[in-house]
Length: 90
Image (cartoon, rainbow, N blue to C red):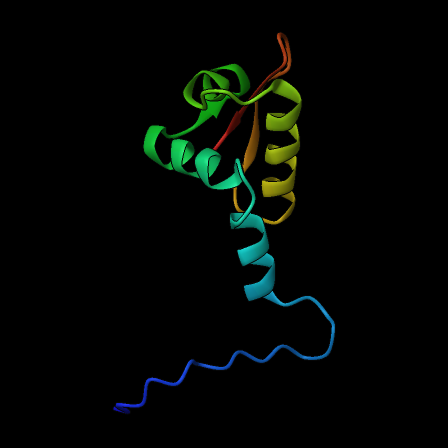
């Protein structure tokens, strides 16, 4: 075990996608960690139930955050019913 206090270097191949940079970028956004925390704390939630848990977020911003987190694999979106249309995020 090294006693050096030098920072650990992280290498990513070229300018391609880097998982560490992507994760830091997503988690560093204003609402992303709050949404992830509420889903971890409360389990699967529908859009409106999640909006009640996240104080101060607008519907548009929440929609964008959920889409971004789902696209990058941080959360899952599950269609619960078709009529009426209902989804849950986890």
